Length: 66
Image 1 (cartoon, rainbow, N blue to C red):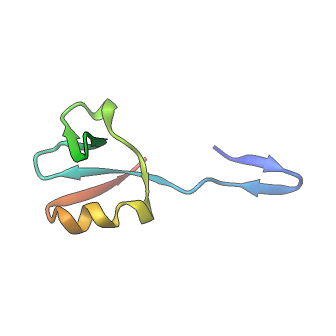
Image 2: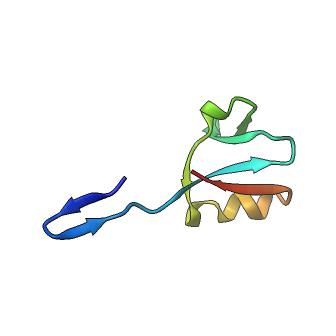
């Protein structure tokens, strides 16, 4: 989605889903721990800079651009 503001074009940064080796999508933090879900509708879209910690902790993960 592209938004025009006073002769400037604003294009939001791409969002990513983090997927682990079991084809589960990152669904956010619940009760202080990382949560993964098989339901991809529960996936939490993140900016690229917010995925670094997840990719470091879980070695077998991938990023999918939305």
